[in-house]
Amino acid sequence: MNIQIFGTKKSPDTRKAERFFKERGIKFQSVDLAAKGLSKRELESVIRAAGSLEALLDENCRDQDTYVLIKYLSEADRFDKVLENQSVLRQPIVRNGQQATVGYRPEVWKTWE
Image 1 (cartoon, helix red, strand yellow):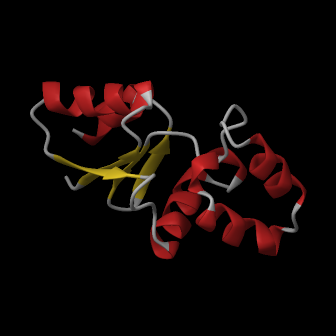
Image 2 (tube, helix red, strand yellow; image 1 turned 135 degrees about the vertical axis):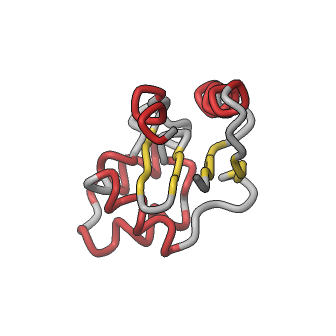
Image 3 (cartoon, helix red, strand yellow; image 1 turned 60 degrees about the horizontal axis):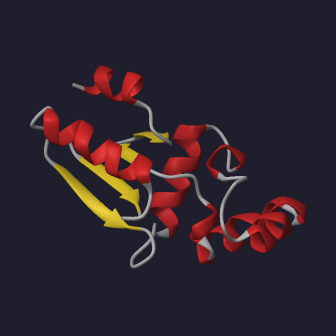
């Protein structure tokens, strides 16, 4: 298992995800979205796993102006805008190879063990 957890330290769900894997003795790599973020290929992989870019967007994010802008952009422009403004993504994004979840999803992570 190669677990990566993308999120911020201020996100309670990110901290809960890290605790979930620590309690089970599963090693993971924690990536701070605010400092590093997802690469273009990582974001494409997560979108494929989640089903759509819409599934990744957090309607309650702090940057509501950018969120609303992204909602009204064309499909082609939406990806690039999300890539440069990752604060609109739901957290945590947890990757295990080609599999990925968005948000706190312990019921899915248990199947990865």
